[in-house]
Length: 353
Image (cartoon, rainbow, N blue to C red; front, side):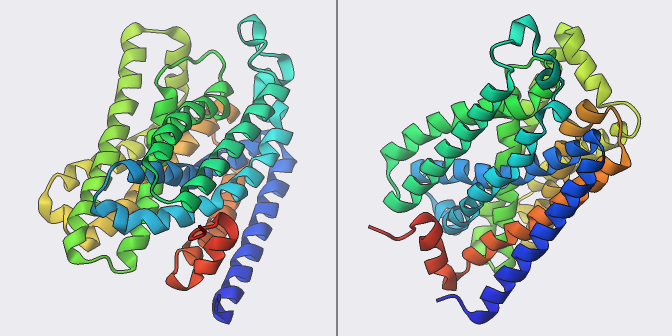
């Protein structure tokens, strides 16, 4: 049974999160461009349960100590999928304010695909599929067949929804690797959160090397996918796609770009050294740096394409929504606690036959 103190904490987190989210939507309502702040916060925050689902599917297929260390926390993070779906509602309601094609049409080339009703249908289908996968995983345990089929389906639907939510902000931008690039951000975000939770809770010293190796692998995958997309677009000199990068290198976004690179490549270089990978303090710091880097990267992906600059209201909406959703994310951390097994059973059926 959930302790009274934990119940009070759940209520406080939920109330604070809802109030901050309401404030963010209030700011966003002041001007359409500020809605981009909500979109950025939603995309980053939704990456936690989405990335956790990806990792959970992989844990069923790849045995090892990492599964024992992170499986329960990944299951708890998947509790945020229904809340992520709820956070998508303002995006779906405000499509014309966020996506130019929703107001003017996607043009002859995209007329069928880029229509509001089809966009909304795909988003609903995505969350329905991920929720079903999460329920099946937690109720049926370590089923390799389910995990294999589920992982294939997950990659297909997740890379598709990444195109919808982010790449369609600029319908003229094309990249075949964009969906996998976004998946690498989601996986790195989720892994950093799971590692922080495990390390702060006191992971055994002999396990820190394993956790450090996982973070290094996730960041290497991100670096490869991010660089290859950039390299191919610039080497082919595709005008529309080059312009997409140029907008994200103008003004203050140039500094954000440098910060993203430093917070991604820096941890990679440090994690190459075994003493760093095996140090609990270093891993906490590098996982935190990874989260900061992915937050900036999500803003870098969304705001320049939506606002053309860094309007104060968009940043304010991003900050308020991010803090609000962070408070709601604390519910997953509570659900990962040893005494909250009945909370997990209530939401995801963990431990049921």
